[in-house]
Amino acid sequence: MQRIRFFETATKRFSLIVSKKAQPMSTSTPKTLHPIVLNDKEKQITTTLQDYTKYYNTNIANDKDIQPIELRITGGWVRDKLLGKESHDIDIGIDHISGLEFVTGLKEYLDRQTEDISGTGKITTSLTGIHKIKKNPEKSKHLETCTTHLLGNDIDFVNLRSEKYTEDSRIPTIKAGSPKEDAYRRDATLNSLFFNLRTMQVEDLTGRGLQDLKDGILRTPLEPEKTFLDDPLRCLRMIRFASNFNFIIDKAAMEAMDRKEIRVALDRKISRERIGSEFRKIILGKNPIYGLSLLNTVEFYNIFGFGEKEMGEEKVVKPVNMDERAMNSLISDGIKASLSDIVASLPVIKDFVFDHSGAYNRLKSLFGEPFRNDLSTLAFYCSLILNKWNNETVIQTDDYRSEEKTTGKKRKGKKVKPTSAAHLIVLQGLKMPMKDANLISLIVSGMEEFGIRFRDYKNMSRSEIALKLIIPYGENWRLNLLVLFILRNFKHMELIEDTSNSIEEFLEMCEKLDLGVCL
Image 1 (cartoon, rainbow, N blue to C red):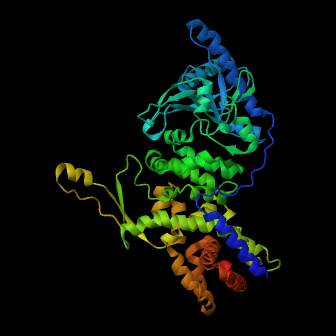
Image 2 (spheres, rainbow, N blue to C red):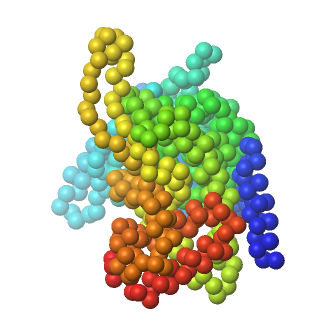
């Protein structure tokens, strides 16, 4: 009877997940909003900024007959504080002058203060490291940002801005704007809240931010398609917020994300570093499965590509052992199937194991492996997402076709060796570190052979088990074993009891043979 109920639950969950364009399930509940209370470090920072703003308005703006400035903390810090969470992500919006001009003046002001009290023993406020991030409209970076280190915090300073669209262009004209204009051009209403450093009050200039934050709803201040086409990374940010805070994305935003035009813009306009950074935050967040379900719903499979289509890149990736149609199918249909398996089946598999009280204790311990550190978490989910690549290899070369068309001459490129497809996706497509790519590639590329060896473990000697199933994976052999267990159940859920027993028996044998010393 227990097995029948288990499969009824699994079937129901799967049908809900894979139903066409269904909004992934969320248990979002109304949030309690808290008054913003500054900690000691934030009080120091805001006091320093207030003091310089008063100095600027009195001694510079007034003398030169130019507009005074007003500072606001924008975005994530305000959201997190209202939710009762601490945040170190302080972004300052400035009107009328650039971030670089403000920070340069602030540094001169603080340096003069240091000189004035030199030798008195008083504590001074220091500002170090001024870095300007230039604008790049082709990459959806429309205004330059100035970053500096103040009182132990990295703080971004940027102009408030407005965006104007023309009828024949999706790329907006950007100029300095009013606080309200800046609020409306942001990715979500609950991220458009400001904290005014003059009034020390929250400003909800869209009129919907506070209520949407309270309700846990992500919606764009303006028409969502324009919002996402301007900066397609906003789609991934919205998915990250939804999964990390258990928010719901409103219907209009979900429908806009699901447009092919948005997926193409994400692939070509946004750097793979920015894409990889958002994906990493989704996986390391509180509810990665919810995040993956949202990615699946809007069909963002191209983020798991090779990154060769990024604007400015001229790379060609070709498969070694399959045709290009099959390779493209793995990037789309293969990723879709894997995400569907993770979302629909992974929670059910875990429930099956943990619902057996007193049984599968060793197998239960395996489920802690993905959470030993960030690398283990990323390797676990990426191995499941990319598992259908198996041991497929690809060759990446420079694209000389445009030159050949122009000159009529063929040009030889460097001779390159085949590389694991999974390795290239992680390293170049998601821009993860080499150690991440190495581990994920080791698991994905070797999983088929590992599974074949595992079937025969009962006939192996102690040394054979160590050499074939443990040592090649080092300290991650248990993580590798967990991935095998999950993938076997994805393929044959009806055999989950047999598979669970097999893994439990193997782990018991490893204990008896004291195979931990092999590491």
